[in-house]
Each structure stands twice: as structure tokens, then as C-alpha cells.
Length: 291
Image 1 (cartoon, rainbow, N blue to C red):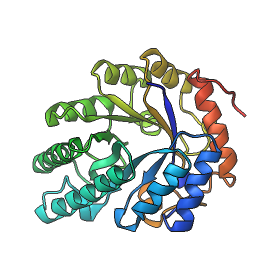
Image 2: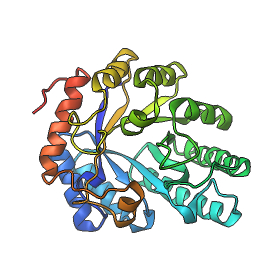
Image 3: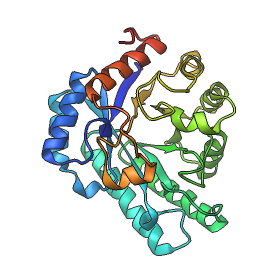
């Protein structure tokens, strides 16, 4: 396989109206990326046929991610909340299938929020069972499920690579893998290199988010990029690396609050996208040089 470089749709837009979809997909292609990661917080707002058409026109691949909220938290002890979460995941999975994508990832095992207590055993069991359920449905369409572990302020289920690998072992589905994110790893891991090696050794390194410590342009914060990208090179990772950045200038109203995006970290998202892609290609030995 050849490594593919993606960009999160919220670098470009905060919603998915027709105009936003056209702008995001066109901008992704012009910036030189191979794919766009769709943020499907609410799958019902997507014009799936239009999205699929635009992706085909611009020869872009796609993935989709989302974070559940309190009303759809599949790690809840409330059966009705879990059922709503499963419905949301099923809708997102259908969108991935119908836009030609092959991966559904993100915080799909709990809500994306700060919890005020540890997860309960019943809540964990609901989370395990939900991921096993959605993985089985995904397998019918050849789709893989990526579990994006997040820092302690955004979930109480999985915060590290080790916890994610344990979760995956419990779920025991071949199409479930670890979704590593440098932003969260920079907060929680003892060693970003060891985390990459552990996921690769387990055969579960399946998706990567490249995010800077302050959520802005890559290489301008405190993430140890030589260690992280070097580890990806050393294990021969040849999957998807998606650039993720958020700013108060371009946000989804609820997602901005969930991620505490209070500052405008950039104003020129074209330069941001192009510079960050060049940075990744240089760091991973894929050609190009940082602008």
C-alpha cells in the first residue's frame, strides 16, 4: 500500500451545506491531499449523493469520524441513550458506505466530553457491546472501525494506546483497530514512539491523526514530531495520516464547545493546509519540503 494523506473537513468548513461541501472538497483537492475526513457529528445533515458525486469528480477518497454527545453516549448506563447512540453510529456507517469510504473512526465508544467520574463497569460493557455490534455491521460492507483514544478531558473510557489495545482485545473483532492522534498522545503517553511500536506490534495500527499541541499548524507547537513520525516510518506504516486542526474561525457550534476551541489559531487555512501537508511528507520521507 501507499501512504495516503488526509485532511479534516473542519479545516475548511463548520457545516456541510451544499456550498460548504463544494468548498471543502475542492479545497482539499487543490491543496494536494488524497482524501478528506468528513466530520459526521450529525449524519442527517449530509447530502450523501452530492458528497459522493463531488468526491468522484475530484478523485478524492474519504473517511468519516464523529464524537458522540451526552444524549447518544454508548457508555451510558441508560438503555435509551445507548440505543440513540447506536442509531447515530448506524447512520454514520451508512454515510461512509454510500460515499465510498472504508473507515469510520473517532470517539464512537463514549461521549466526547469531560466526565465527572470514572466509567462504570456497566457503562464499559455497553461500550464494548456497541463497538462489537457496529463492527459486525461494518464488516458486511468491508468497512473498518477505528477507535480514537482521547485525553482525560474528553473521555473516561480510553486515554492511551495500551488501553485502546485492551479494549480491542475485549471486543475481539478483526476490523477494529487503534486510531492514534498525536495531539492526545502528547498529553497522555509516556513515549509516543513506544505507543506507535506497541500498536504496530499488535497489528492494530490502522489510522493516524496528525495534530499539533495547540491545534494549529504542524511543527509550531510542542509535539515531538521526529519521534512520532520516525516511529511511523520505522514500523513501515503505510496507511492514512490525516491532518487535523481547529480554530474559532471555522467551527461547528457544538463541536467547538466539546473541544474547547476558544482561540483563533489561524486565518489562512489554505496556507495552513499546504504547509502541514509538506511538513508531514518531509517528516515521513514522502517528498516535499516544509513551506
